[in-house]
Image (tube, rainbow, N blue to C red; front, side, top):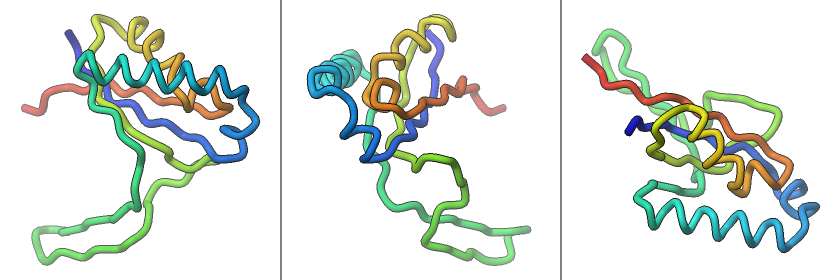
Length: 110
């Protein structure tokens, strides 16, 4: 099975506008993904780390990425194909609550 990193984007307003039953099923879906071995979590505060040319570490307590919606969470899932990964994340809270989920194939580094 291939591994995929997912990034969920969404805001509280979109979440609040989504029917409670739809949200509850999305959270139950996340619980099933966790039970199947996926690492799923809500995004905390971001920290940027740099060490250009190995000359010294600098840290900034802020996100580097910017998007129309804030980052809400991350997951590492396993699926046989990208199509299966799409099906798995299509039922998650960010996907159903007016947000969006990106899926990134995770390739092993050399």
